[in-house]
Image (tube, helix red, strand yellow):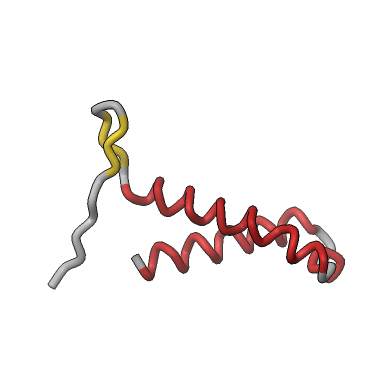
Length: 67
């Protein structure tokens, strides 16, 4: 059985479900930032911005695979 993907409709415009997954991933990554800063997550990496971006990509992929 194939999974059903429901489009997001805003103002009569149909948007792909992946945009909704991207918004959820962004919200999850932003909500994790204070916790990760408290445990000094960014000092483990040479480039903290790339580390935070890779965290977002990981969360986004996990949401997309589990949806």
